[in-house]
Image (tube, rainbow, N blue to C red; front, side):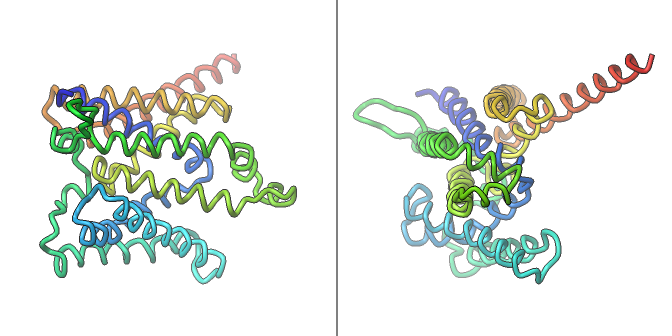
Length: 290
């Protein structure tokens, strides 16, 4: 597989894989929790790499995911304890865990080959290079990261399909969902575990900063186009695909970082659609006024 084909494939799969769980993250108004998770996984990644010597090891993914879940459980515990107001619980926990990861990288595990820039913004182009590909026999089937993210995407889709009714009901009316006997807590824990797994799987490609844009912008933009929850997911996937394609083409032509350009295009799409909707709404209002 050529570098261009591999990079394009990885860009599209990464964008879609992050956007799918982002739909319910946005609907539940938990967007900043993704920011917290993306920072909190760093010490888990460092420890996993030290133990296994690889950024692709299942053990690394498990250790990083556990660190991500710590932010979720810790945040929920602090919120229920009412010791802190608002979302201050996330502001207390995730900087501490991220700092631990930075300290580990700069002191004890300074010999671990994890680039600081990759930690922040990922490196899609590096992941698309041939040494990072899966080879079966003599056939190059593409980047390892793409297949990992594809597997995570399938898990997310299956989970959303099976638990859609519980997620939909608890998103809009938590008390009602609990009152009719829905196992809300169990479903929520699994969902946040999958969000964390998605963040970890996309870490090499999008880093701890850009993964937030890839997960939040497409569903947030889709909400400007529809309020129908059944249409929201396909529109989100379409927007994620468009931003990946436009981001890749723009980055390729202008010699820019691919992940960062994809995130930038996500933001541009949101602004354009928001402005267009505002203009259309104002025009409709003025027409009705006449």
